[in-house]
Length: 467
Image 1 (tube, rainbow, N blue to C red):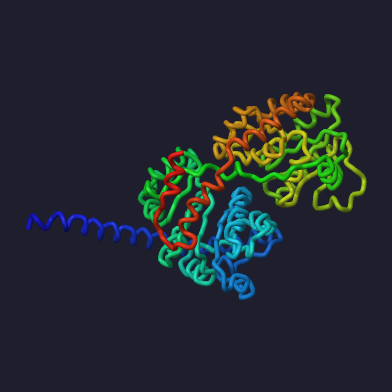
Image 2 (spheres, helix red, strand yellow):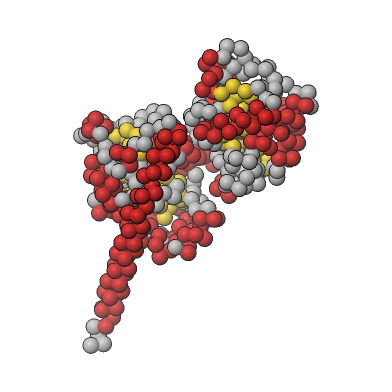
């Protein structure tokens, strides 16, 4: 009897673990089912208030026959990026996939409307979809219809039913450009019992740093599936911009060539007041300057316009700019209420402040202006971009300001110092050049699954982890 007990132990444990996972799945799906009564009205409200289609068909797994026809007869690679930031970060990887697998079809899915708008402008994408709600019937239907050969999920989008369905259908799913923030890590650890079985269904996890790799392993990912592939955001491809290119862009936005342009991008509620105050001080100091104000969520444009009106600033919305013939003059504001143009505006700016950082929102991507050789200001709340913010300071490409007062002081100082701005801009380009290479590291992992159909890890990715 005793000789048999060692064999029974693992079997009993496996049965218990399987039973526990089944109970977790049942509990999750019951909650998901109940959530329908909240999810549907919420999305309907957002669609009506923002003047956008609900896309309920796609969100419940129904894809139009005309869309499916675009994928017929080809291998399909599916990239999922929840919103704007993840979509932009995925562009270097999408370009590499298109180049290396020219005969495959590329599908990109998003959760947010703004992410969907940005995705629709990416060259080489064959089909854009809204990501399905995480109900078993929805995810099973869409996966069986699209039939991808590989799924790449940007950063940390962990939808249990979608991941389990892909595993059942033998579709390898990779987490790419993965990261675990300080705040999220402690939450994931407390729920390790829930996330561990989900992570074990992923074929590989490509993490931005050694710390991210350590954290995802602590949460429950198998160490042998985790790879350190760096951050795709450092691989932003920035075309060389000539003086003529810059002049044409400035002309498009009615910005005179001989005037300073300050852009406050991706701002949140509570930041616009500080930015407007800083701009007021810049003008009071006798400087000739124009400001572009770009709220992170364009639907807040009316609220921001009200702030500008109360402060006495004349402004023009980007959506109404085509009707304007005369160029902006000092003291005016261009209110960017459209999606997908912020990089263009950054490219012709003299100085940029990136929002979500003076208020506790975790910050936004400061590499975008830095990649365009534009000096960057940001606030103290950069939890989601801690490593990038530290590198910008280390390389001398950006400055952290503690509050609105420091923003005002630094804005005036840098607008008065062209040589310093140029030095910071060059440092930003150097930062990206020295930290690039994430795309190829990701591709070394991806190549193990495309065409092979295997779920294991190979030597090339392991070798990358040793570098």
